[in-house]
Amino acid sequence: MTRCPPDHDHAPDGATVAVSVLPGLGGVEAAEWDACAGADNPFVSHAFLSALEDSGSVGPETGWRPQHLRIAAPDGSLLACAPLYLKTHSYGEYVFDWSWANAYEQAGGRYYPKLQGAVPFTPVTGPRLLVRPDASDPDHLRRALLAATVQLADRADLSSVHITFPTEAEADLGAGLGFLRRQGQQYHWENLGYRDFRDFLDTLASRKRKAIRKERERANAQGVVLRTLTGDDLHPRHWDAFYRFYLSTADRKWGRPYLTRDFFQILGERMPDRVALVMGEDEDSGQLVCGALNLIGSDALFGRTWGALAEYKFLHFEACYYRAMDFAIEHGLRWVEAGAQGEHKIQRGYLPQATHSLHWIADPGFRAAVARFVEQERAMVGEDMAALAAFGPYRRGERPES
Image (cartoon, rainbow, N blue to C red; front, side, top):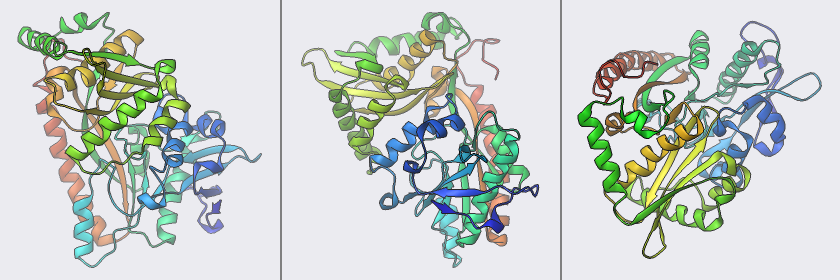
């Protein structure tokens, strides 16, 4: 355990808080971490984050060096914490700062390494400043965690700190402390208490409703049987197959798989009841040919990764979007978050939702340039969200308002 220097362990309001740095989750008990993380979002759980570390998907050799923050209560128990990494690149973040890095380095600066408060490879909004629910002043502790990221960066002469996909409340808090606030967008589907998928279809314009029905029919008429597996239904053969799908997709899309085979195995062992794995089996050969990985939160289903060994018309939409909606309806989940990018999701009921990130830039001149950029970008994103939402498939008066 590395300890921040005492003269840097102050929350912005002046009260002293001791913050220490953990070089990995092996230095904290799972129950203590999860008491701070809560049960709503599976990605900030000890099980998920430690699976990344223990599988070798995250670590110094991958450019993600854990530097998790820890605040202890007087009795030594964990009172607050934050997943934090020293990054030597910008891969696996989904809030793109490549242009910032290029501009800063062309001007003679050194952009990397930087500090990243995030869940690696996971563009999912969730808490990043984790505080035990019985803490007497939780926002004071969150401010202390944010202040500690800046103090660590300042002490190590790093260019910047980035907190990606925090909650809106955390984004508000960080902006109040001088972090630059950046806005992005994703596409989420809202379950308005639908009894079944047909009930959802009834809220759509006639042409859109017919298109989705036809799409689902064609997707399911190709000799591939889809099943959604969770808990004890998950077996090593499923993870073996899914890892093949994952590698195939990585080869086609970005050429670099971030996650190891061990990650999927550990995920299935440590949190099987939080996994919903849609697997497609060829009905003639019995071979597993495609799959979509989802994680289950308290109120949302989070779509993460899709892969297939061959091209199947519309099967990606069926496995990733419609089966996720079916699962959410059946289990009473309010949201399906289908991941980053993809305007094609709008016609399938997934509407734009704002996402946030926080950025601290050490160099004053560079900070001013980034501040101008994020302000202009925020206005454009807001305009895009309003325009895109108008193209949704819902009948007039039926569009979800959130």
